[in-house]
Image 1 (cartoon, rainbow, N blue to C red):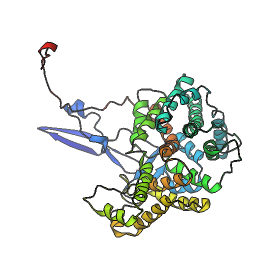
Image 2 (image 1 turned 135 degrees about the vertical axis):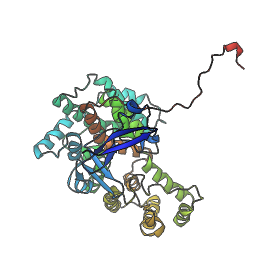
Image 3 (image 1 turned 30 degrees about the vertical axis):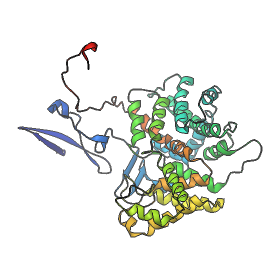
Image 4 (image 1 turned 180 degrees about the vertical axis):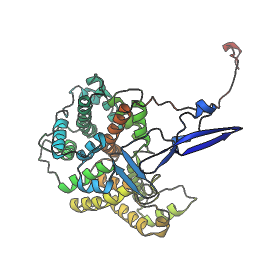
Length: 428
């Protein structure tokens, strides 16, 4: 007999089915609760509510586990490249050598961005935040690609994926180039995706741009680590916008906007801002460690601990090594990064932090790497968006091909009731 949950309301007992996932996660299916009882559930922030069944990403915050399509993040970061992981997330299986080559070649077909997009970029003031510009540009792609994706067509869906991945990387770099006043670069089909992103960002016409393989490897890993993370704020946004049958570009644009928030994608930016504040105050790390331990002090260490992972963030273990390699390869001499190293040492050795599992997380190390590469702080979330893109696409595709209903949360009304209209001349 299948497992059921029972809810007792007065003299009435309602039985609700229990759903069990492949990793033995359990959920009470309340989809018929309102029809059967007239009640809804209240779950602010949806912290205990499952909105979908998904076969893409599994994470266990207690054990520090993250899997994409059943593959551990550790094995993928060690052995796979970013586009290989993109293919896995979106299409469900690791590609063969031939499939991966075709995928890379087909992405190259779509890396040219309509020249009129430059007029849109030029319309933004210099003060515009890169994420606001990126969201607008992504949405604007709809105007240049007005035909909706036929989600039932395997060929249509495949090329929509390639087009999105191909154009988004160029737009991310254009946002940066416009911000710093550099001429816009174009994709080089003789180079790989990650190598292209680096030269799109940093190559200038007056000199040859040399690509450092250590930097390529670190950035490749960072993009993989950020590729998906279950039903977080931006991913849920992509799914709920897409549930109205909004197009892929519009849904991705909504995800960019959600990621922009400092409680979500802005965490690595906050890490660098914290380090800069410590430096401005004299660089006394011990002082700020004591402030972090003082429960009455409002100061909080950014980039330590994680709201999902109650143990060590598995992504942080991987990227810590890459961060060390990047700093060594580039020979960076930056007082901000020296402060970061001191904080890292304290967090890994101090019993206060260890007992509370306040270890450096992926945002801490990604901020350090981006800073070392010379990427401006306000561009950090754009980097996050580039990594998260395949997850958003995969989630949108799964939602649309699964024929999920339009998202429509309920509410409990707590406003005023049954008020009589007062004519304008009688109001005080």
